[in-house]
Image 1 (cartoon, rainbow, N blue to C red):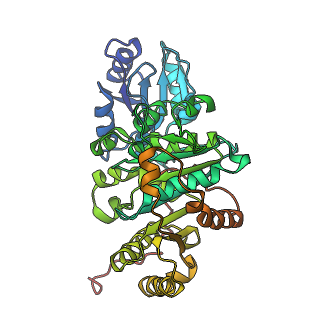
Image 2: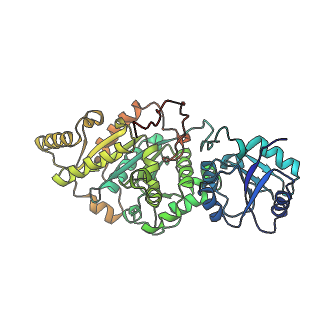
Amino acid sequence: MSDERWVVLGLAHPRAPWFSAMARWSTAAAIPVDFIKCVSADEARARLSGGRPFSCLLVGGDVGGLDRDLVDTAHRAGATVVVAGPPAERDWDELGVSSVLPATFERDTLMSTLREFATPIARIESIPQPEPLERDGSWRGRLIAVTGAGGVGTSVTAMSVAQAFAAEPSNAAMVLLADLALNAEQAMLHDAREVVPGVQEFCEAHRTGRLPVDQVRSFAFDAAGRGYHLLLGLRCHRDWTAVRPRAFAASIDGMQRSYRLVIADIDSDTEGEESTGSLDVEDRNAMARQVTQRADLLLAVGNPTTKGLYSLARVVRSLLATGVDPGRIVAVCNRSPRSPRKRAESVRTIAELLGSDADDIGNPVFLGARSDVDDAIRDGRPLSPQLGRTLHAELVRRLDTLASPVDLSRGSPSDTTPELVTPGSIGAFTEEAG
C-alpha cells in the first residue's frame, strides 16, 4: 500500500462545486489528500508563509487574487499551482501555473495531476523551484538606472540622458524614461497635467499576464519636444504598497520588450530583509532593488562638494553591497566647475573614499553647471543638448563593451536557490567543541 500523501491548499469561491467535492473526498479518505480550505488570497499567502509544507495550491480560475505574487508565494513555499475552471482567456504558463483542471473534475484526474506536478509530503526528495519569470529568448532593450542622494540633480540627469539617446535617429520613439522613485518628481519636471496612468496602473496591468507591446506603450506619455516617452511615477510616497514585487518584475520586462532603451530614475536606498530583518523595508525598496539588479549600467550622481562627494561614495558603496558589478557603475559629478585642478581634486577624493573599488569603477564623468536648466524646466522646453552630450558618449562606450542586456530570468533580487550540502562537509558537534 502506498504511503504517499499530498497536502493541498484550496482557494475558491465557497459555492464552487469542486471545492466541496475536494472536502468530501478528503474527509472520507477517498483520496490520499489533506485538504485545507482558504476563503481569501490573503489567507492563502499567510498559510503558505507559515512554514508548513504544502504540495499544491489548487485555486479557482475566477478568484480575484490569483496573480503573479500569489503564484510566486506558492512556489517559494515549495508548492505547485494548479488552476481549476471555469476557463479563462489567460496565459497560465506565463503566469507560472503548472496545470489547469476543468471546473468539474474526477478523483482520477486530480490524482494524476498531483502525481505529475506535485510532491507528496510523506517523502520529499526535492523542493520544486519557481519557474523563471521569462522562458523565451526574445529581444530585450537596455536598462540604465540613475540614482543619487537627494538634491544632487538625479532626475534632471535622467532627463538629459533620455533626451540625448532619443536624439539618435535610430532611437526615435524607442526611449522610455520611467520614474520609479518613491518621491516621484518627473511629472512636475515635465509639467504633466495628467498623473494617470502611472507606475501603479502599469504594475497592476502586469499582475495577471504579459501585455502586448502596443498596450505597454499606451501607459507612457510623449515628452513633447524631447523625443522620448515618460512613464509617470507614484502619486504619493505611501503608494509603494500597491506595487507588488513579482508584478513589478514583469513590468520591467514589459518595458524592455517595448523600448530599445529604458532610463529608470530610482532611489538610492536598496536595503532589504538580509540587512534589516524587515520584509516591509524590502517591499518598500522593491523598485530600486530590482532595477539595480537588472540594470546594464547604473549612474551614481553626486555634486563636487565636500558633502556631495561623501554622499556619492556612500551611494556607490550601497550599490556594491547589493552585488552590483563595479564595471557597471558610472560615477557622475553634476554641476562641476570647469577648472581642471578642481576636477582632479574630486577624482582624488572619490578614490580615497572608495579605496580599491575606485579602480574598477573608473574616473567620474563631469557635467558642467548650467544656468538655463531651471528656465527650461519652468518653460517646458527641452534641456540643452550640451548637458547630456559628454555623459551620452561615455554611456555609449560602456554599453558597447557589455556583452548583452542583463537577463530577467534571474527572478527578483531576493530569489535564492537552495544548494545541497554534502553530508559531513560542515563538521560535527562534539562535547569538546561545545
